[in-house]
Length: 588
Image (cartoon, rainbow, N blue to C red; front, side):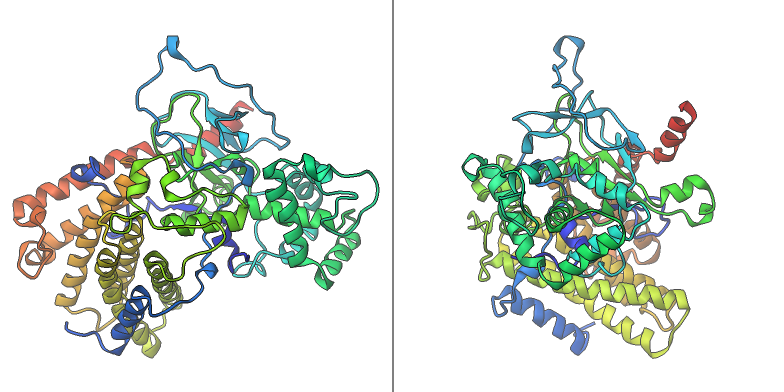
């Protein structure tokens, strides 16, 4: 068992609110039509990328996928496998659900709390979590919160470890952070009850006897006792001794058991942008009805107080209609689109929580999107089948995603420094090869998984769109850039990939989700550009060859439809967090 090499991977994804971007190929969009359903060889580089992808998908490579741990983020006791989709109808006074009593959390209040509360219920994962206190529309702001701790630079890109604990001990608010962490699962009270004093699970014993092992619940044994033993195996030794000594030097009274509990709480509750208290109360759900954002910094107003606040808070909004009394959930996984076998393995590895096999998932559309051919692929909580089709597809995707991220980061640095020369030309050639390999990957995955709605196709298409966007930017800034034919071909491929992606996203995420908006916007803006620059690539023989774009009139209708749907969804997600925070401050 191992943690992710990157704490951001381990803790899940934070979605960035980039709707303000004016870039043609960056903003959201949606398709009304699909909502009801869900130059020769590019040189040795392109060939190498394609061959590598083929090798993995054809089962010729068997690297360990456990290094690609995309795991859950919030408290392990909050996990649940599925919940019913919320109805769009509104409750009448006569049929209002009687809500459970509110659970008082041992945390300071967040910056903003919307119409929800924490309750205990056997119908909620972990028996505790948020529910809606009124009927909610998609885009409703539910929570705005600042992290109590952000990861130190030394931790980023490395396995979660003692460096973060040491960062807390040397933090100016160390005492407050440590005190707040005591309320996150597993709580200090639970550890004292289950592990401490004669119960083992870390150095520093003596005193009252811990809870009898025969009295532990299954969750207490697996998620707390067993995991505390794993924390001890992974982190005991000289580094632990130095960490405890650092605590004493900083005037903090703490022992090894406390450090192990803090590590476990951070593992169970961390997000890519840090540790949050109230976000940790959201339950996990594959069919989640909420999404977590980090608003994008607005550089032109960076000097104002509100804007500095904007840079360090996150927010949660609904993505579906939610009925009063229904649970409010997040999808912890990053990337979100993974095979069921990978999800099951990662959630067990990270939280010691077993979601069961694919047949046990109650939502039919989620089961359908994981079929390979017409078969339910096998899965297990404690291992991945390295010979499975989905394992090789995900391994190939991970390789391409990592190469794309390297190209993107390098290009951003070159652009900021206004550098060119051989390095820029070399990167440009790599980007062109990547674009061709990523587009071919879509067809390879369709053929290999034999399921036109497989969840991994969402990830394939999104990868291509991101790769194509970077290539088009590079081509516009470099001289020589892309030839007219090269640019037209990339734009046509962009439309085709978006056309495949949109109905898959609607099926998986629902028609009101911000990612659906983005894809609608991508389609609308790219069609508009192609009509003005290279219309023959839309409806000509060398173009998209899609019936929806076979004539000029059809293209215009489709463009208008995509942009209308984008505007509809975009209007559901107002940029009103600053306004609500300001209003709260005025009332106080």
